[in-house]
Length: 506
Image (cartoon, one colour):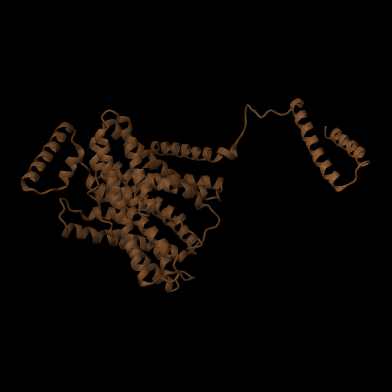
């Protein structure tokens, strides 16, 4: 067809060239020729047998390959967890986190991921999923103070800076870089320890001490990390900037607490009117918790602290407004989200572990590991001593429980996420920090996590007594106590937490 068209155009050009030979004629002729070609091609398309655009089968890996890979990761990880719990010899000695890291390492050997955009986009959701399971819990009063986190951050940062100034690490590491690394490496993740506590059925007091301390630790670490990451951009930090940074830390923290509490109270009020639409209760609770996170980040408050506060308020004030089925749904939904987040993070940890661009510094790894372990024990012993002697406690934390609490300072998902988020342009030693974090996570998970169960048995930690099955009697007893407390408040003219609990619940 194109040959016939070109011949036809040549004939037209030859015939008309005899009469006209101007530039205007040539431009008009080219335009007419283009129209003629387009016209003939449109006519030919109607009759030419062309390949159909409708296909019965196609392979679109570029479009949905990422989603398939992620789903396959999760399925393989779920199968690995099933095999792990059915293999007594394995589950009795090795924590579940070790299996997930090993699986991620195997995947990383087969598939090298150089693009980190996917991780950057999903990091917020993963952090939310990890925190929300712990936040929505009704046992939040028995928690260890977050002062231990500040103690660890300060001591590790100062120690690393002294060693850097002494030349133990080779090239000098600035103080602010030591501070940001000390902050992220202070994030504890005792998932393996809590799992073992559940298996051996340790007493609830010890369980919630470790659980609550890790929850508050995550909130404090992420907030400090956010503040220091801004200070590190300033070349010369003055006293005024330090003061402003400290005030900003307070604003970020208290802003998150206030916002989370308000959204939590709103959730409790909303669930008062869901008797006829119980199906929306899980949606309200989960999405309100998520809104507290994203709205706090929108106003530059601490999303983790806001989410934690919102979950605690929901657990205390909105929980009794929910039906039994809704509570069960929320419980397993949050567990599923947390499990998926842990699986993805540990898989990526294993993948990152086999990357080629690691920066190894033997002295930095050894000194950091020693500082983390030593200061963990010191902070736990110091704070529990103060709690036992200077605060009114119904039950004293004995020495054996203090050892287990200090021993359970494992590093994991939060520390890895924060180290992976470091920008090498702002933090020149970011890659060395990531490598060191990976090694410390492996050491604490494989070495400390694998020996927690024998340590619990050797130290003869008190076991939790069997739960009283008289649920109706306990519920009536709680209601009588609340009624008596309300009467005492009315007579005395004073208000306590019970006043607000009764007003919001009923």
